[in-house]
Length: 262
Image (tube, rainbow, N blue to C red):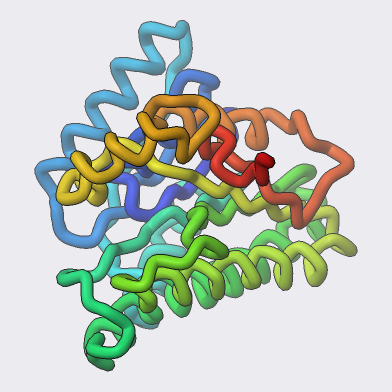
């Protein structure tokens, strides 16, 4: 029986990159999406194709749910329980950028609330639901090595004055990873934070020219954009159990952005 991964916000971008890498290594995947069903269908087909090309047979299912809404989080978890009866990997990837970048002296509460609800509150309480289920599975000897991953951002520590709400939401998510890592260690459930840098997705398209200039001028030691595939490979390494004596660790996938260089 294949292992099963739930990846939130998986219809496109980084989420799609993650489920494709998991499909390569033979994981069944639940592709959570909020609104873009067309993209979710495309991701399902890509997962099945990718798995076949790598000699794997998997199940790829889509499920619509806005994880910032309690009832929809519960519906997502119940679907997985009914369909699969277990879960081996939760990847908290779903996240949004501000609809409009605004200086922190002018930004409004509506944008702040939206980002906190989707980027921080939703993953926090989804992880609570999944964690309690994983504990049950471990206690009943129905599962050996469940894992949880939070996809955060260099914005968890790097200041962007025109999107403070995004930075705060990612800093909160980074702390959530540490909290759950500390709480779940006694049950043998490791928790990891994968921290992307500048990744080529729809989210970064509006500022592509600016980031091109920054990368070329030395913002990152590796002078290139990151890709969703880069993030997916980091998650796949975790899924394969390559970090058995680690929990609460930050895995930087940022081209070296986090380095302080004199």
